[in-house]
Length: 84
Image 1: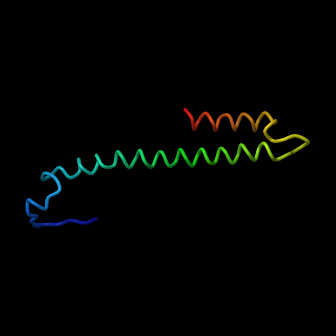
Image 2 (image 1 turned 45 degrees about the vertical axis):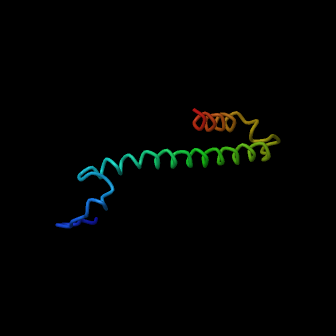
Image 3 (image 1 turned 90 degrees about the horizontal axis):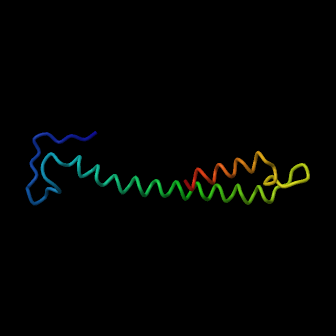
């Protein structure tokens, strides 16, 4: 926490009107939130693709994991969570 008391700032050095700094900060955070959300969607897609490829490759009890109903449902749920 940083606080300036009785600190004068010349008008030409002010970034915005006095007492409106929080509004400016919150406006800037909107773009940051969008950027961060897009990163997480990309990570989720990558995790899904890894799981999808693994389920097609890994065999258990004589068949691939992808052909097992429980695994297939879980992959479908992952896909829907990402895309919707």
